Image 1 (spheres, helix red, strand yellow):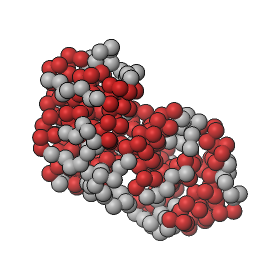
Image 2 (tube, helix red, strand yellow; image 1 turned 120 degrees about the vertical axis):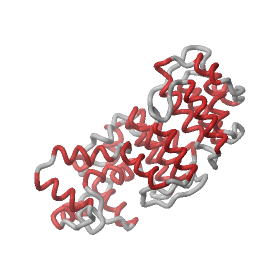
Image 3 (cartoon, helix red, strand yellow; image 1 turned 135 degrees about the vertical axis):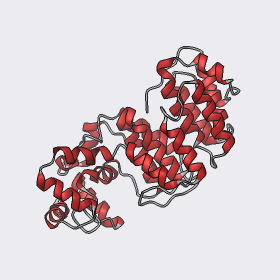
Length: 312
């Protein structure tokens, strides 16, 4: 997410707006998120415990300086997704606040995403999200940097066509010592029935960072585990991580049908897990979009967690 910083006295209007767009200020998920935002602003937790009254749009705009408005709207968008279901009144309130902050659909695509989610336009929603989804950067980077052979293997993987040499290389991870990243990744894939890269329907190599990440932080593959991974990766990605949080809340909290192996769910996101994992990723030294997990395959997990400052 974009970093958020406001001048003294500006926190109450923003927290009041968060409560307003959530429509459920008493919901524990909303209060937890408000506490997270208050902490970002260096405010006492008591301010989030008794959320301020919703401000007028003009009052919010007066409190939030130009440089913080995009970040403020990102928090408002997330607040609108915390307590399902979405409603027309909620989106109208969100759009009113966003417009007052100078952030309409043309500058904040998440506003369009929520409209599509409310209308059930899941194909258009998926297409919009995938264009901005940070992990796709790894595919684009691999294509730009790769030679002919690399690009051909990438095309095969995207088409779910097996590649024997790639598969054998990843099967070799089974021979590594227990407790190493590569062995943990191999065991993770076999235990969950996931094909290895190169095997039929296996992921393209540039996308293995996600399941390598599961092994690195010890996250399961249920909704709680995927929520943890999304929060962690969003924290690692800095300003680019907002879409990861949006994607997770759309899929597991609002039940949007998105291009993911996991089935959609309603109200299933544990906001504590999401935000705690975000804090761990934000505090770490790992840039998951630039990370080469294969280079770390033989390194013990304990050592990697120390190297990257990952608290598990």
